Amino acid sequence: MLDESKEFKSYGLKTQVVDDVVMVSGVVDTLFEKDRLRELLAGQQGVTKIDLGLAVSTDGAIDDEDVTWEVMEELNANHGVNLRHVGAKSVGGKVFLMGTVETADEEREAVKTAAKARGVTEVVSQLNIRPGGYDDESLEAIFHHQVNNDNEDEGEARIF
Image 1: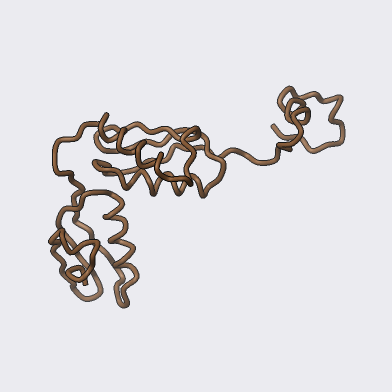
Image 2: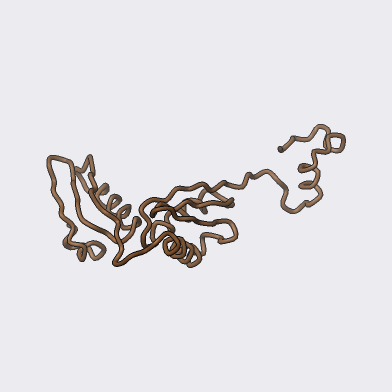
């Protein structure tokens, strides 16, 4: 199956199947490809366990600054992620995403996109999701919630 796959044919991955367990070893370029391979194998009939002994490696030396730059470039290219909401820092190939996003979908998209960058071995989301409940059209309502004006909001639901 992998020998016929456009995505993975060029990697020369070694595959072994014992009973219903698929074991794959080799090297891929990005964490996204490793995750994609897991998805592909999980969709195969009869597979109950997947053991990926894959290394994520690049074609040359890449340091944390380069990885961070690559991640930010990938995030910038994705219109589903707002760079004003998301920042990244790489430590030994592990990328930490930081900031506050509007939705859980934006967080998932940021994590998936960061995994596509060269040199990323793991993505850790430290993203917060902005809480709902504020009336975006009423700046006065937001102000009163923020300063906690008890006397003016009697009987209304409180958002803290």
